[in-house]
Image (cartoon, rainbow, N blue to C red):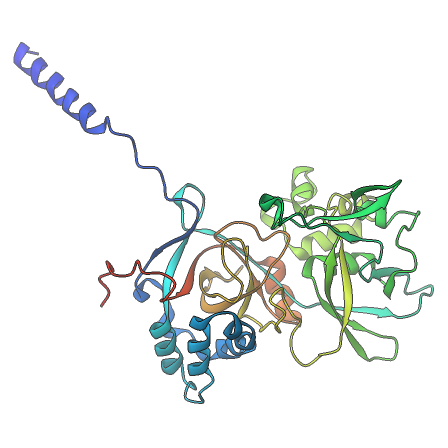
Length: 385
């Protein structure tokens, strides 16, 4: 190797190092990302968009009162002229602009799961068949709100109780279901299956078939303030179920096959849900936005990232079949396990299909939030056709 070649190699290396000496641009912050063209929403032109109209209409009375942007869109939506996919698409494009949701390390892909409305068997009276309680919101539970004085706690779920003149955290699942029965007298209904009651806590609402065959709805009333823990993680970690096989169905099967260990596993999730009777049985259960959920058009999201009521384009696939699942959904609910910017829980409705899809849904996917155009002004640099 001659001296000239060595010098050229050194100079080339130094030039490369100089070009790389600047700091590497950090990935974009998680959350609402830049505006994108509508063509970025894969499947937009093949979705039966009009199916989402009902979900939008359900929330219009609430959102139109809070936002002039929504009032304008809702007035157009309820004008009687929006009755086709093309008409709804045109309305949304007129009033909204899609923005990509960005996750950790700048990735725009996250986890899409599902939930459904189960039907349990129960009674208003306890007997030898029905003796597992669903509790109403306990009168002794305190809601602690320091948001005005401590802004960092504004969005925290703080629940407590008085013990020896001190405010302490409210009872955990293990304490509530223990032989001490600290909530005795607060029962709303009695269920025949403890595992069905446990999964109702995860779904958040459902229907209960009474001994005479009639149905009564139960909906979310409150939560004990304890953090949510997915017991599937423990079952995988302990080697009870393979990670690839974890689902609502496999977890339930394990609990039923291992009754001696079932309580220990369930108690790893200290979160506990309290219920109220729901008399509107025709529509779906109400989510955190307090509007009826629409099957496969309503989703639960992290409301600190995606405001409730936001239309969201979901681009994922169905479990097992791997069929593309690309459709317009509306952020109308929240959940203890639904945390992060690219995270959604699809409400599949009720019935066997809904249970199967919700139980196995754990797919990767992308989310695009449709934001009213008046709120953002960063669409000027888009070169959309």
